[in-house]
Amino acid sequence: MSKITFSNKDINLLEKNPNILHVSEKSITYTNDFKSKFIDEYQKKENSPAKSLSSMVLM
Image (cartoon, rainbow, N blue to C red; front, side, top):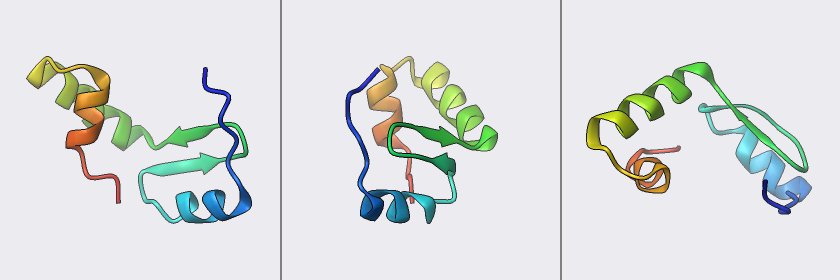
C-alpha cells in the first residue's frame, strides 16, 4: 500500500471524478462499475494493471 496522503485540495478534486465512490486522506474507493470495466480491460488486453488503468479515461 502506498504511503501517499491526499491534501484537501486533492480530495476535493478526486471527489468530482464519477469513477470514485469515496476518497479520504489515505485511500480511494472506486465505483463497482469502474472496477468491472477495469477488470474487463485488463483481461481483454492482457496488460499490466498500470497499462490498463492508463488506457482508461478517468475523468
